[in-house]
Length: 142
Ligand SMILES: [Zn+2]
Image (cartoon, rainbow, N blue to C red; front, side):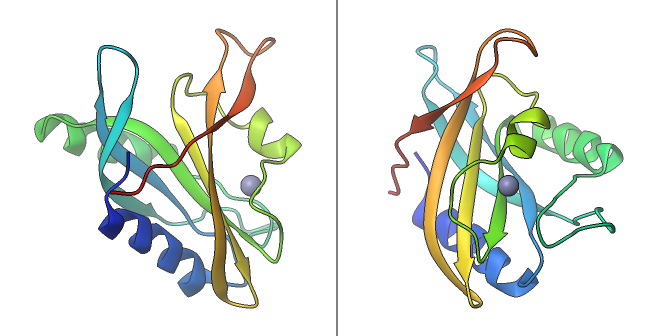
C-alpha cells in the first residue's frame, strides 16, 4: 500500500529527471504477513554517468544514510523505485541482476515524452542470487 502523495511524488520525480532515469528508496513497514506499507519516498541521485537514460544506481553511502535516518524514525526500507524514460514499466534483465533486497518492492514508472505513464510494482522473491525473481505485485494507492 502506498499513499497517494508518495505515489504522485515518485512519478513526478521521473518527469523531472527525464530523459534520464530517476531513482529512490521507499520507506515504511512490513506487517507480520509480509504486506508492505510505504510511508515515505526518499529521492536519490542517479550515480550512473555512463548510461543514465537506461541505468540507475544508488550510491551505497546514500543508501546507508537513508537506512539509518529511517531507523531513527522507526521506518524500514521496503522498496526502491526508478523510471524508464520512453520504455515500458517492466523490469529489465539488468534490473533483476542489480536487485538484492529480497521481499522488497521494485516500483517502475514509464515516462513517455516527459509524462509519467504506467507505474508497476514487482516484488523480489527468492533466497539467493541464483533463484531470485521478480513477481508482479499489486500496487494499492490509498
Ligand atoms: Zn529499470
